[in-house]
Image 1 (cartoon, rainbow, N blue to C red):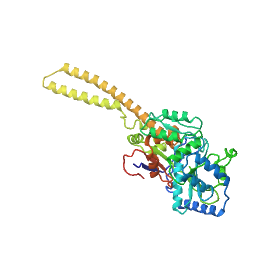
Image 2: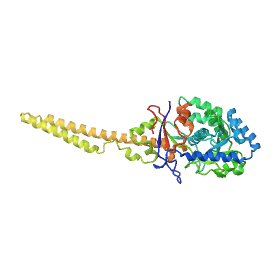
Image 3: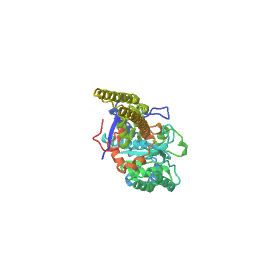
Length: 437
């Protein structure tokens, strides 16, 4: 079943802080303008007229690496066409030395594939999407790790930088939450395992994405280790000497207006996954995903929002009204020359004791409910903004594959829109109606 999606007027990430969160920009346009795609078409024509040289030596080296990653013939042909400059290239930067793909990488890869499809509709028939592990753990790649969320809500790091693959697979078996899809996922990981973390990731993604115009590069595709610590722009320029790069996926404002001989920036999809229990918490506290992501929802206030504000006053008024009713009953009996003073006194004492017990119980229940609310709100924020960062920059694809199975990527790609700048919130519990705008 397809997932539901809600699109929010939020940017990607506020820069300048490790604990940066999503920021509101209500005036930002939702769809990319037509001139964005015109810039890609103009650059493509310039690249075709430039007649840039083909680097024959790179083809054997890069295709052999991709072949060792278990690539299909369609993927090898896509890479060869790119290296022979028969196709235009869209580069998708991935994390280097991190085997478990993180959700921001997956969203960039989906955006690159969707951009290729959009450009084909506009007349560029030969477009190849290349995943390239070039981002180091830095400000550009955020923390550089990859994690899952346990059933208890605890975050477990599942990063693997290469080496002992058997030990890593065994650690995953013990760490991953046991679900109905665990056996399938562990089988996929075991088949894709490699001592090289970049090859491990490429093998896994090639098994999950069946697109024909998709290929992957090794981290040293642009040359030897001399360029390892260069900026992404510098390394892209070196890679541009080997293939005709028309675009690069980045979490930024959008494509450039001018069409120079350089790759144009295309903004990657930004999305937050909302699981069923998280959606129930949003409904319970009557808040929206936008309020949580923009940090407008205050847990301290929400925990007490639906609780009695003046519990002591409620019991005082209740006790006063009941005592008044007993007094009126005693006066009525006295008018009948009946004075059951002993019974009245016993009733008053019993009521007083019962009322005190009831008040103490109500206070304890209110305190317990407030503690439950605090825990649920903490988990809510923990799922949507783990460790204070956007979810996609922390949580791995493996977390969602483990819970939602092989159909997760298919359903995700069906609801996401690559040319929409708004932050997309995807509700994974397919229990309600159509997509919300």
